[in-house]
Length: 158
Image (cartoon, rainbow, N blue to C red; front, side, top):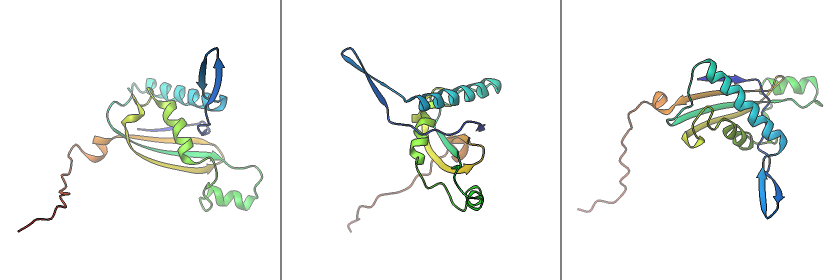
């Protein structure tokens, strides 16, 4: 399944804390909370329109985070970045994007993110920030057969 989500990627920011009486409440910062909600709503609508259910078996997820270009760069540098010559090797890093992405789709695209057994992640520049998601059931991608491998490294005595 492939989905293009027209939402700018948002990294998982550090959680915020608020004291409520004798208890401490932990919550997501506003930008992260909005991103997770918008992502979940968009994918939920896509799933509903295509009569799809969340994945319940092991899956392989590929996601490309298309982040916006910085505003203060030259035309030449802009073309280099859009062409992939200068990749976005700046913060935020892909692991921070990935965390908010996975959390936003928990219970929507997959039952739980523990079902993800392999991830392929990229970040690129784009004039129209968005996400490209591809999810494949592990059994579809790799077949139901498991290759047995002999990893016995013990020395045999004669």
